[in-house]
Image (cartoon, rainbow, N blue to C red; front, top):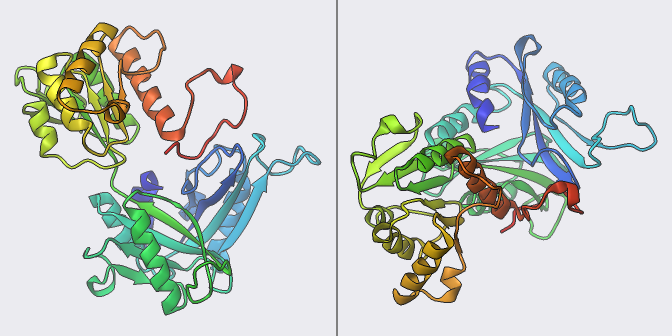
Length: 377
């Protein structure tokens, strides 16, 4: 959805109605996660995808219908053994898609939401999927104290009742900190533990950060793949001769500072990735001591097994316990037999993705069970 916003904003600013289809629920081996989106705009232009091609044709027709009559619809698609030619997912999974019309009249907050996402300002869009409330109505919720919303309230729109708006806004702000997206259920007036109203919370948190320490050729490759995966990448090195923007991809921030000092003054959270590629105990031991005492999704360090053992000894001497040391992924990356910087970057990225989603890293050919998992954490 984030990638579609430049096009959708252009349509919206021009007053051109478009149908926005969003995956709101998945089960089994579905090809896309909740929040995946596709839109059909003027001239039947299509952007985005909800299934990687399996059901796009049917969703395209639904989007045209909602634009024509102004009424949102939801549809569930799954594989049908009885009719192999029916619209469905050949992977055996199931997805539920909400398709709603978007215009300045039906969604007055869309422009503000798009601007917030572009500026990196956290915002959640809550949309009614089913129940007595009008399907497709939205409530945009910004973080507490943020300037978005009607009159700076941090909220724009309504789901039908004050109680429902209040309950959903509270949940949206709680989920926004982690960028969580998914269905929630409420009573008609926001009652907890009821399921009369299904609401989809779509959180747009700023991109997670990737902090790469050590301005070497491996760092350039890791920074490149981190940017490709959607991270906001910063490369830090104390040596100005190596830490130059010309050696790294456009859009990657390059900082000249002592790594541990820079990390000490930098905020991290449960989505942050920290890659220590300095390969020098003068840099990486104090840096890892700082990293392992703070929140992060992934902390990896490059080095041989001998370097790793020496590093672990030094970190124990610094006072880190075994629980803290267990968070360290070292030597960094999965065993792919990687040699070049680009191959090593793929190895590191593979380990980050596996840790995020609970993957094993073994070849799928010899594995059993579901291919797509919920978040590993």
